[in-house]
Image (cartoon, rainbow, N blue to C red; front, side, top):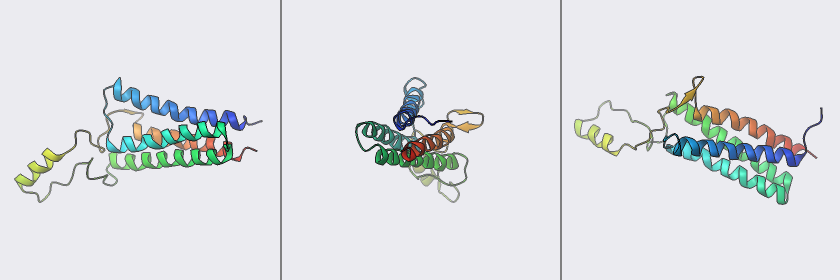
Length: 155
């Protein structure tokens, strides 16, 4: 079996990140699902991967493919972290999850409620096959990282 060319692999990997971004923006603007802080954090590496793809096609394809792979691994890692926050395995950033109300006075609890962000990172607004968008991003981005790795190793 012959692997596709490095150029084809780069186009596929960068195009995958572009598709992920378009999907995220569609959920946000067409599906009326505002992103939380961790959702936004997952988007930046995809934008970087798209940039690495454009740079790889212009010059230094091997170096840029390595950068694309790191970007895909980064967004996958953030997606895994976000999945853990959603499932209650660990707490997320204090600015996007509900804090512990035990031991708080009524005034402190009211202040915490009033200061709470509108979009929480520990709530799942959409899921498919029991996996959230963060989980799907983590899985898909691992696949994109594998494609970037193939592009990087391609001679």
